[in-house]
Image (tube, rainbow, N blue to C red; front, side, top):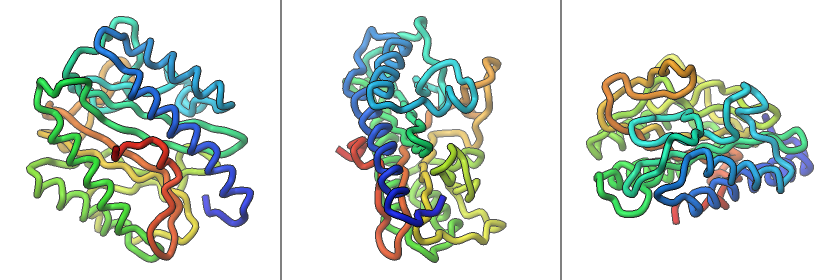
Length: 254
């Protein structure tokens, strides 16, 4: 969507605060020995208390209220009573929601407790690359150039980017134009970021794979060549200068 009046900006700020606070509190609540279903139920309660509705559940009938991926799961992990968190796990939580007709999306990967499995370098790369990408987004910049920046930074750190997972427009629905904000230089994409447009910018940084494939459950995605992936995401408003980060309250950089 494009912000055309103050009421739209206020609506986007309210739903973005809801998803950001939910993500932050879920990350803080996660503990070894807890099931991903327990963590999802906790997040669902926060969204409900804030008057927001889970976007994946509302839009796609996803079997959960948030997506929680663990270990070699890249994204869209289904919350389960059988999936128990362990010390050192690489965890990704993606929270998106609708509130009063406005939609927002954010996500973060993190290591649970001690970094026993050496995932922190990957997590830090994903966070740092998202920060750098956002610092370079403004009206008139080509979307493909931000993708080029993300891939270049990933390779410089010894990682890959996932080429079939992308950021996207958002606002009046979960996925809007621009439909794809890729993590690589898509030479076919001549579009530019537009002032006042609302977009979700995501990094998909991996150790081995370049593509994500869907498992038999119909939702969970893993790497085509295995390995691990870290993702971080903010919903922003594009301006003539630095973007307005609507989901800043998720504290993913703290």
